[in-house]
Image 1 (cartoon, one colour):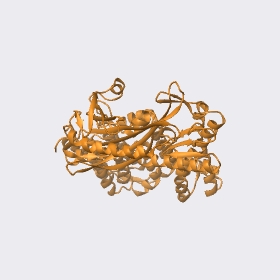
Image 2: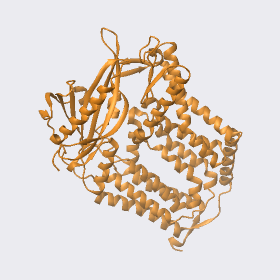
Image 3: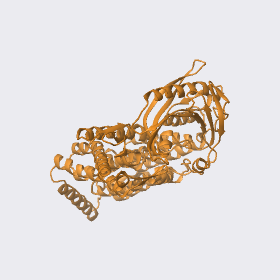
Image 4: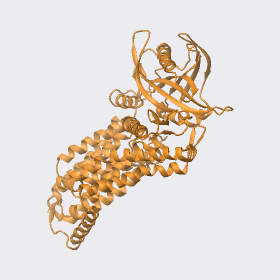
Length: 573
């Protein structure tokens, strides 16, 4: 009997399929150097994922590192079902694997990790279908879907979490006003209104900030609700409803947190409830930290309540399911299947899976790799005259900025007088070899103590007739004046855009990242970007006062300055 015509036991066939799948996954995602991951050397997809999850945003995404263990337990939990399934592989899985290989190549060529994460999901799904079949995919579907929580989703912060923070602040402000606590809301900031002998923000000044109410808390709650529903609920409809409730429950938790901070500030003081401001850093109080747990306490309590409404006795459900699964596995272990499996189809599909891995790595080696870094699209020179403005000083990078930014990042800063006479600062920052070396102002400005109240795209009409689109940030920072002890507010406008090679422009951080990867893959252009911006202080007033005329004039001033500044610093394409 030839090797291809042999028959082997069902248990041995399972072991061959598991080992073959593990080898393919390890070769592609654990062994092969994939990208730099903000490091000087190349690392594989999974080693890079570990680095990113452990270090991104100060380790705030480190809970993603627990997901492989959870997924492994979910697969083990269903062992009583998949151990009885025959290996009835479908060739459609080969197509899914090839799609995963394409994403792998895209990420390898563009030196970016997220296509590699997508490749892990697709290649794994393809392996399940190719070696096991549709019945295996049904049994392991939830474990496969749950793997999506492995991947940190920081790029969605601006597009998902930021609007939710503003909405939470708006709802909280409306509630406080409704119960008689006069409150003003600007963007994600909440402050007690002026009146009754108090100035604006004197009783409380809160911000639904990224660390306390951003995507990470929502992401974690979505993960918990998905696992909770899978274990405690019987019907998929109930599980889906519970999962959809994670968003309003997260908002409810953040609402309760804000109410606790507001009550604590009014009853005691802001330092007790929120913390002390030490320069640009907020030293969080113990009360503030405890209030942060309200997000999860309220959300988890809400999950139990929703589960009880959807299905009665959820705890009995999970006990029954766990006992049933253990019993099925025990019966299987006591009486292993005697079914014989032909080796021909199994070995053919194993060879096809290995072939996809080899072809993917070969194409990545032959046609992958980053294109050479392109020249800058800007001149690193601050013009002496910009319209009616005169340069009065030119500076490079400060020592603090040099400590934060990578060594090959360059910066030029020029201070100009003209217009209102308040003084305007123009800044050009270039990326280095690492394309994540440019930070969005929406991250840097809050780190310096500013609260961003609006983020708006605006047209910039150049003298030659071209119209570019920039991004305008309005932000403020409250402080206590030295000597007088007066509480004051500094309002600032910042306009910026990103300039690449040959006149390629972007007005958003993630837009410039997307252009970088698309051009690297499909045009062979590796942009070295420069962020061109100008910053204008528009007012510095006592809290409670506001000059909308000054802000309107400031908007026209930064718009006009950028229209005259850009033609002088952008290289001709």
